[in-house]
Image (cartoon, rainbow, N blue to C red; front, top):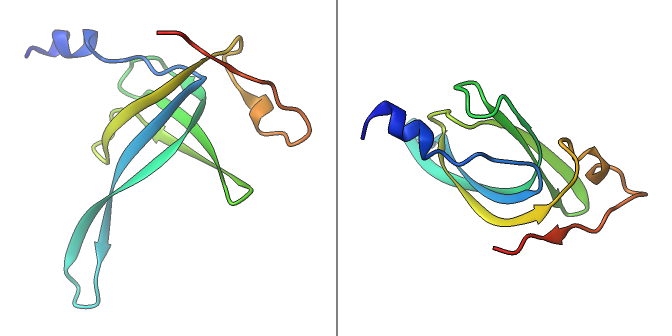
Length: 113
């Protein structure tokens, strides 16, 4: 596969998508041996910056035990194993900052495929 065809087949991640991000984590055990595992972070994309550039990032938010957790992931980082799109919601904003507030929530409608 050529480099130009890889860029054209890349999926553009947009706010409102629910994604599963598989991230490689390196750990050291008591003996000092290095071990690599994959950790999954599932949440809603609330911001996507720089489109499909090499420095593109997405901000993903999820609720964990009633506490909001946000992570910023570089899309083309070697730490990211893969990104799966679970669902896509129809939104009218570029930044979904209203999902951060507890007093105001909008109901998002799922896109029909």
